[in-house]
Length: 441
Image: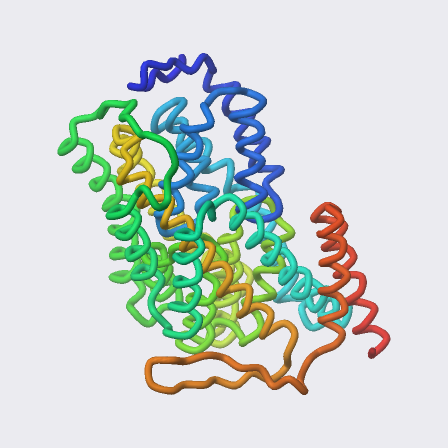
């Protein structure tokens, strides 16, 4: 049965046909959020014509507002538009599952073979390739999001706030949305008219959705805490990644710096450079790049099991990864199902459109900040922290430049500029990294 929206448009597509398309998207969604969003747009808007361009972009802007992976949430939103909650669940789950299974396998290989020279070289090359992929994503998102000097101003301000003032992500995103709400004409073009009406009882919808959130998200974390105690690595991961799901705006690229710092410095789950390794592995899998958290949860629980014995480390790592996935992605579904009816009812509202467009511009600054962070830690072996008053920054020692990583990054950049596919780029980087390690260059 088709799902009839309150827009007056009936989408003539069966759930079975839609499910096949969602599975295709899940299996082919390589290359990060920019490529994933482009893939969804091509299949759902251009080829299938299940959604109109303005519906898709409105949904995208809303997903940019939310914490968590915007591409996965956009898939969920599209599924909801076509077939309600059932369609949203199917679309979101199929977007996650292929990458989850692959990354569990890669995480297992990493903890068992990570110190083999060939594997070390592979990971070295991946890090340099990831830098190029992030920069490529920055360019693509910037082209889509920055339409005027006001948008560029918000993006630059967001970069400065994160790179030098160390302001939290939520504050940057909220400030951008507030500016866009107050001055929508600076960020949107044309006239706006409401095209939808609210399709649910507001109070009933909010209570029902939040009740499911408590049952599926809050209560499991509380039960785990009472069962294992607050010192358990599983409880720590459940609590931390639940918190991360609330504050990590800007998708996987934005979450990296926050989770990396906490996982390394506070919890000791990872070594300093392993967050980059995890992202490199996540880049090779389909699905949202925030699946890098699967790697973090796996390695943290694996090492805890090795330290205390009594449980098989691989089993422990798998359990930690699954707990991480659960508390990371259940909130993503909640945000979509809670907010989508209201967002659709306000589609065409100029103030909301302005707020969402300004947030999208701020996300460009978020990704730019991460690009700089990546470049510093990939290309230099020694990095110093600088702080003076409210200003802080990481400054690399220029003499510590790793020319091998720079060379691989330049080659990958040339391949990306010539529009060579993701896998040839990753393959070139890994082969170069292996050669450098084996031959002691």
